[in-house]
Image (cartoon, rainbow, N blue to C red):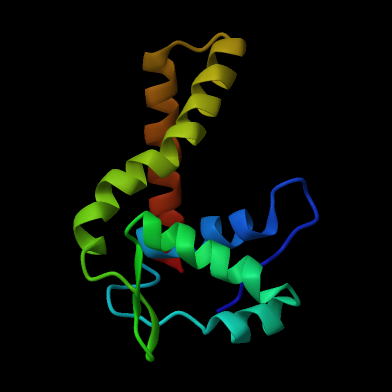
Length: 130
């Protein structure tokens, strides 16, 4: 599992949580997939194992992963029921930014929706060509 740790002000455990959460919610990681061991991920990322353990606890608290004694940490089987609500929660801050920016630029909601549809069509065409 490739996780990028940046040197911004976000705590490292939170960066790990955010990236694993995104992979689960977006469907890159599926129910039953095994996460790397705490020690293994800590060595890969060159961080303290307690940092990875804290990230895994956070994900477990959110119900995204579950620990299985002696076998490891796995994406929760119940995650597929949660993902749509979590997808909405993940995109909400981006929508807020887009709405604020469009208001600052003087675009009303109808104009923004038209622009979103045009951009969506453009992206769909480029995805179909590749």
